[in-house]
Image (tube, rainbow, N blue to C red; front, side, top):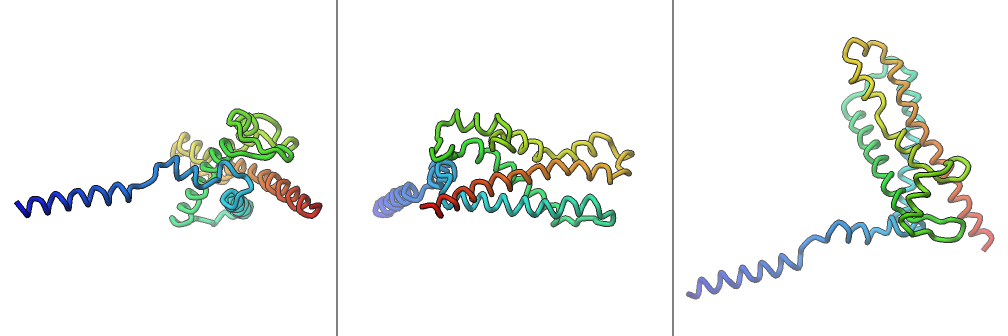
Length: 190
């Protein structure tokens, strides 16, 4: 009898410890990050910095891959490219659902945020980046190489040119530099 009560106490203790140590939900974790609700928070600034660094890496690697004929990447380089592509795919929802500043006003309305990301001219109005991101994220070279079969793979130089849409992300450098130059000017004036 005593052993049974000890076992039941252990089970109840285990349950209470388990309920106290349960993992938070995904929405709780995302809400605590403030990456979507605070465009001037440190998490969003770090994310933007990561994207800028990856765009700069692409500015070096893509022309190198296209122009150097004897470059045969090893497996670790290909894994690095897949990781970069995954981060760029993750950047799309961050931009689609993340708050932004329109002048000095913080825009948090989901419909306005989506409209800002989906429609407009990214180079003149600094909105409408969705189509640039989508075009840059689609792996055109893999789609066309796999659809043509092994006989057409001999002209790989032409297929390497299909990586050029990834360089459309250079416009993001203009976007981020515009944001931070405005921010720096605001600090100087204050």
